[in-house]
Image 1: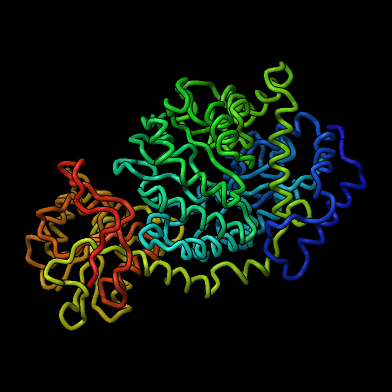
Image 2: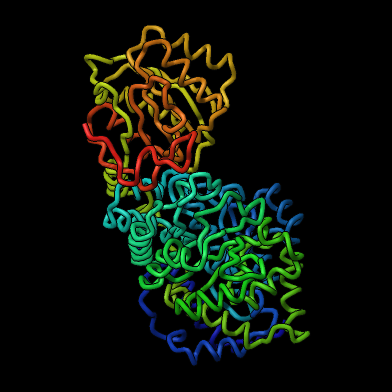
Length: 609
């Protein structure tokens, strides 16, 4: 491909980047504008004018890639890249398609440990600078914390969104995001797909739930703004998602195309406030949702492909001129009505800027190029998105300083002060919903022997094991005699019988629950254990609605932890053992199980000792 950048310019950029990667003690990125080549819009326009069509199109894509290294992935990862993308590694991906961003996933083996992540990031940025037009990349991930975390230990894992909603502190939300942002920045990740700005008003929502701060739009708006400021003060860009609001759905857009039936007035009242707050806080990017909202666009196109929603509402009504990134284009919600060649073109026509993770990059990339050549899209339209993306890269300092220092990784990721802050913040989130006859707090004198049973959901990256094991270890550390006997999310009859037999001779049984339903075998486990006469305490480690399924069970106490990372579960143990008070209150209402129209526990509810 013809080199459309002058040698002197390429030399300056490459030299600056090379110096940065070897500089001792390189500092975290900042959002302050950087002096020099990339400061002015006119300079960026000059850069864009020298780019080929292929380069411009590539800059709009954010793509997955397998492997822990940009150039030498494990053989299995290289094979996966060849099958799915037609390249062997990240460096080849960047050379062939000129992509403007890479998204990290744990399952793609991108996030093995902090030093490896930093090395991968530096390798990606080096490949970006070795292109004909050298441009660093936005490196992104979904580090929401709580149940969605791509970067795990030894990184600091904070309580998730609904736990922070239970704590209710904007200062805590901002501090959690600042710490998380600093650790991401140290590893070279500069765009986080968080915070979730959806207002979870539907208890049956299968995809958002505890990923939301709660059900009150004003409370959610305040916490979203706090996290935007926290992340961006640490030198990365936040991403408010999923516009125009994914909180009231019965479907999961990974597997279907959900419809939100809010009227325009309901949308203004319920869904819009957190996004307005994010925009007012200066959020660098906003992610669209693959949902249908007929009151906002009667065409029934998903919001990602809807010009009335993306351009008409987000751009024109809300006044947002930052980067709009699609949710992943390999999700079923955006692929049901159109083929993989049409989706990226329609997303750009709707007003999106970044095209995230298409299932077949060659098809998507070629389709956008052909749409320009045929006149369906204009280069001017591409340049609008490209300018927003380059301006964001400029504000992040990437055009001058794209690399990270290994010493900064050691100094920042999992720092003692960060871990202490995580425990402190988590300590204000646990919610006590039921405490019959004042069973809690437990004491080593009256209830020294503790049996922990129940669900063992797949561990997110930030845990040291299933929640039953974490709880048992935490009780033991406080001087109790505790044993764990995980029974799983779907315990068998044999599992239940074994747990009941193990309860003989103990002083209290703690049952970990995970999204109980009326016919859940977890519910059978709780009822059978309560029948033994041993006091039973339940701890919900995902949605807080579990307690509604336990009416009449005879349990002695029930808590909501909102997640099962170490910090959230340890906080619940401190509450049970009386080492901390139950400061959290419900950020969502809990409806009656048999009559969802009736509220069992309202928003703001919580029992104190």
